[in-house]
Length: 329
Image (cartoon, rainbow, N blue to C red):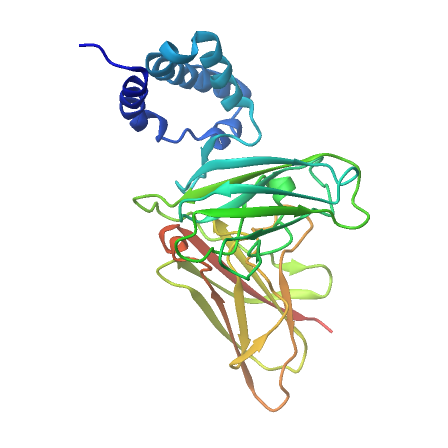
């Protein structure tokens, strides 16, 4: 029975969809040793080439299929990838921006209603200041920004930063990249992604262990931890000795740099922490709030609470570690 080209494309797309929707964890593969990585990538490339060639080669040709497979392995802004917690990121658009040649760039992106994030391909690991990313949607006067700005160590860590959630029913957004004054020379690329949390949530990794000292003047007084999302806050109580108290908070797994924090001392909100930092791996200490102690109270109760900017984060595992440091002076 004859079949026209449109019906053939529809049939092939339907047959290949389960394989194409299965994310390949490129980021995890790159993090392994070179020898193991190439052995694993060879197996993955064979599987992808076999699936792709069997479903698309009749329309595009074998040479084009091989080029696509290779690009997926080496691309810094992959078509799709999976974070260690099982969250899948699928690319919607790519934009290139050179602050030395243009002040801004605007481009449209089709969205589906899932959370949207922006992954940068930076001129260098320590590039900055980073261009401003905003978005507008039809019928809304609001300008949407990255939920936590600037990017939380995105150039060094290769992490996608979330956009503030779009209004319900949004199917198209117009993104704008704007240069920051005195931006260094170099070309940026930005990938716009939508992400889906894992269908079955994995177990969270072990909570971070805080340092015993920070510099010469701050020593660890007490600590606590919680497993997200079952528990969303840590509460610690210490004697009030009348000195300044440092509050540090670290998040593990896919929560680091993404979830906002609320810090309260004896019920009063303390400003100073914007997001839950990743556990330190070098001399840096992460986000810290300096809480001055009310002289009239004998004890201090510090509560650190994680806030989910979107409900999908309740399907992603993680940990919260809170450490209190007291000055020796």
